[in-house]
Image 1 (cartoon, rainbow, N blue to C red):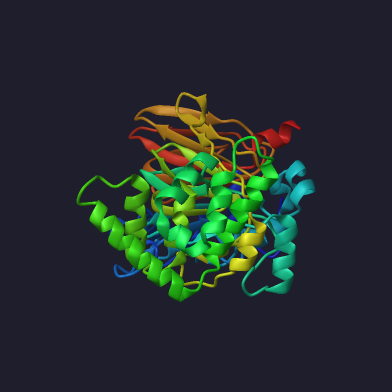
Image 2: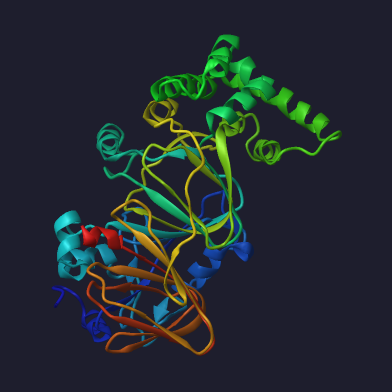
Length: 442
């Protein structure tokens, strides 16, 4: 497997017999945590060897082949210090995407025949201080259309199912609440009725569980669209009433979790329609080691905490609230499934004493959470597709036919059909992303 055009130091990577050390990309979105408090900031500093700006927020650490946040191969395979690999190899010379295109067999035959030379998954770590936008990701057909019509906004033509696996306590808005809960909201949040009108509010209250599913979806779509399409003046006025009412109620009773959330969102995004719309979504709280997944056309907004996130390789986001970025309200309101009810929470399935596997219903990816105690060893058997490893803490070794020393901040790409043994004397915490193992069983 010789890569044409790679330098001598690049060819030395083959000495690792299936593992390549990578440098990821970082995103400094304003919702991220400050450098001192951000897992992303710490990972990026250790991974790249670069100094970080203490005044900047560090929001996302990307590992993969997407053009918006490429990963680079470390020449010589050594760990990074001050922007250089041990032994003097220069960083940032060859992207993982370019290398895979020249060495496509590393993906494995099954992956290559399904997705070509495109790595099917994108792996991230998120550090969230302030809520992200109310958003959804398009399905494949819509992604192709949006990319064709607005390529500067929708930068690729792929769908983006995703999964968030909590590193800390993690909060998110995810999917629409049940019909029963929706009726309670319409009855107890007068500001929503003020925006949508009494007629539409009565349509909601007249719904029952025996109605056809499509009828309920149609009414919910009308309600959500009316809220999201309301004028800035109307939203500013009703939110002022809402905040005043909640502050008064807070003096006589304890506010609900959703009410407390709304007060917090309004401080982050004053006069934003997303504050009012938050009442319509499930408010989900994950403990470390719990995960939720999101299919195409499902509304969500991550609120607070840190997580590992995996998705199909795409950066397509349709936004409509809680953001200073471009909003596409019409597209968002028209694309949603309007399914109601709580999202499924994944707790993982043990594949060995130290590793939990999280399997969403998407072909492109799965995630393993591996926490090794001191003086332990675990084997990751050969898989028909590639894998990506991110070391979150501790230190140890990863061995194929050669041994690689790893520690916090290290990122490694594992070629398809590679047996890997991981060992530690002090403890090691890492995550692996790979193609969904169910895909290979079909």
